[in-house]
Length: 238
Image (tube, rainbow, N blue to C red; front, top):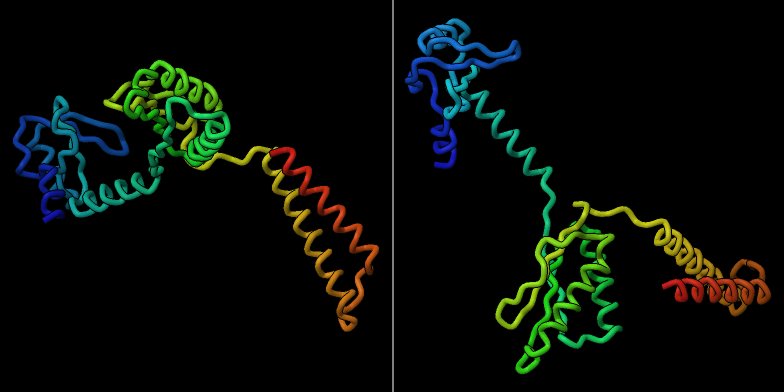
């Protein structure tokens, strides 16, 4: 049923009943009487396919109709594959959200936008808190301003019942590249984990004489200190 609907989307050969058509191809385009276009199609062993019926005159191609449908199906499949799936992530605030909660939600919003998703942030007014709707609007505008580097406002704060919402779209679709600062932090964290692993192995060597030596207690102490230092540096940066 679906294929029949696709086939009936285009008029072919004798179904084309206008006086003249424009034939397009690799060599350009030309306007000819429809009867002449049908004769050309028969001589080439192909079909006359109308691809743009609303043009003046309608635009047609000389092509095998089955091949034409296959090309259209393939093109539609490729376009669908190139589309980036964008989700809308929601973030909820109260009219008097604290700084710690705000920073936590701001961090998540940045991650959502970097992944190519949209963000719908809203303030929920419960009971008499609707009196603080101006405060909620200020909060949402501050939120959008703090996300200016990551997204752009699609819809300014609007009150919808007990909710005031703002929509923010990512500046770039798809997964964003990691910042140099983030990559450096991840590298240092990996080095710290490796140092901690070596310290654990050295400790096992001290308690198990059958294991091969790897520097003894002195090396173990040095590695543990280095690992602790790196982990401390990473936490301070965060």
